Image (cartoon, rainbow, N blue to C red; front, top):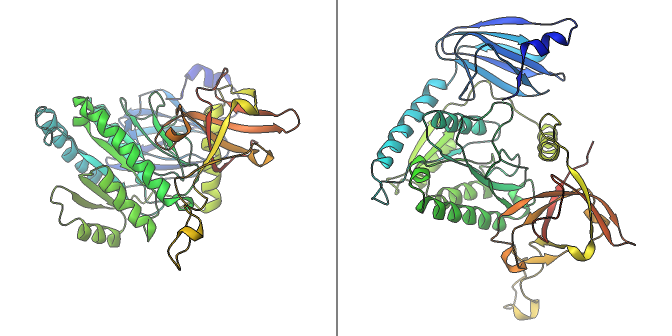
Length: 436
């Protein structure tokens, strides 16, 4: 957590804007940080941010533009220092219903732990959180994970929302074990993520490839669970994207099936809940539960979401507090093999039945010539040893292309650390970032 010592804060001098807010039990302080840094501490009582308890008497620093809420079950006094776009207290929240869901999941985890020899009974809850854009899916996922971790479990977090990316950069489906309550500022820890690169901020750029990656991630986790009773009993929490109509709805059903979800939490939409209950009614082991979305959820327009994507990419290279030092490296064109996934006809028109149109192969590997079109693109470094392994291989990390020298056949890129790349095969999509 981003702690700031009291002495250091006082030493900065200058006028302060410190103010206190007293929260009654089961109330929430909703905050949108302004363009300048902001800090907060808990003076009395107990409180939490997205399921993670706030330590008493320690200043927490929050970056500009962050939106979050401080909730208390029994009452608390909060002290704030800095400017906010808005902050207000709400006494109507869905937190009681959320914690009731956690209690049910806790019971299922305990039953799974008590049945290690039974392959079905030893499987803890697999929870998938669904709903429209800006309904609070990521926040609810974090709460359920943090509450479980506080109880000593190590649930697996699966993020299928390639538009934003909670675990790593956008454009990926990813999973990671959660061993501690999630830091409300720094987010998901990156010790052991399992990441597959789609390469685009929306699945619509290549829907079939997105399905392939979701299935690949699910199968890999299934293998891990089969050899780890603790992870199996703890289960998983799966965050999804806000695309719930048409193809987006089909992708939701695909994810529910791929991960063998046992609990579907529907946030804030009656129609979606009704549709899912109807289509899943023949699966008695799947519970569909409608939950109210929080009144503190803030709607984001496309420009804000795009800016957030850029922020996530910048954070990958430079850190949340600009405390990382990425390295600029140079490689020869011949040292790297770059591929795009999808495109190109599956078969020539002459080989197709009369009247049939050739269609693009969504999982075809297309070699990419290195040229200046790659500038400002973010590429994934694959663990694959051979090109044919790229589709099914997870990625080691990402690089950002800063310069292409055609004459010298040199490519300059930004990487999180110094040294050779862990693989020679790179995947390119449409994920761009202009460093500012």
